[in-house]
Image (tube, rainbow, N blue to C red; front, side):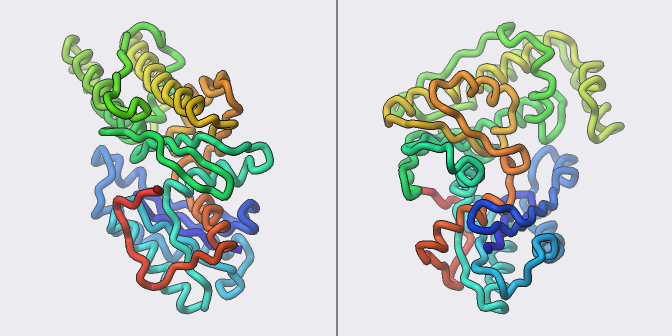
Length: 353
């Protein structure tokens, strides 16, 4: 029985997972409404909100699981990558609980957690070696994963992460933050072939990604048109209605902009799965793992259905940041007795390999 604690960015989460697969509880305190008014995550605000939320979130997770702290097998906590101030809150509290209850401590890489969000749900169907594509607002990485969870980095973004590109494009067009889910909801109403975006040719490692170019292309598209009133109308809608419906968004979004959103989403998905195909063939993968916040994207999920290998996604609530995945990733570490001591510290740029 492992208690997982996740606080790498703007969500305070705790969960109890038994035997690495059975979810006994899953509690998440989101900060989206707090950061939305600023158009992105403000690190100082995130740290303060983690301080307010960490105790009740962990208490609720234990209560829902019906377990006491001293009956836990271990406490798994995210040590990085992420925002240092946010990570410190989770790590410090995990250390305190470990000391008070006499329970071992496990340090978990946030990216590995995303991979285990898929592994825990599809362990019986997954075949190794597998290609893991981790796509979120902060990460776009591809790993070769072999038996025993040995990782080899194959490619990564050289600039913006895919989810970051979604959010920045949405913010540019007046859809607010986080904008990725809004683009996903509106894309089906546009023509995905109306606006042509080119796939970047990567020098050196052709498995690396770059999304800064497509973001700039959207900026140039808007600059070539008169869109001030349209964008102002969407921003006004957001001020009046914090969470507009699809119908409300469509009422202030012309067809040309819907076509742009559909084309943008199609281009990003095509780039992700195109490089994933190249990587999978090169390493001889037998299955594809897709995880991270962008794994919620309906366009990506639909396109992955035509991938030449079986593709596995986590369910929606385990795609975004959560503590279930941290507890699940801690399970093999517990089996190997890879315990952390009280020198465990926050590592903003921690790498998986």
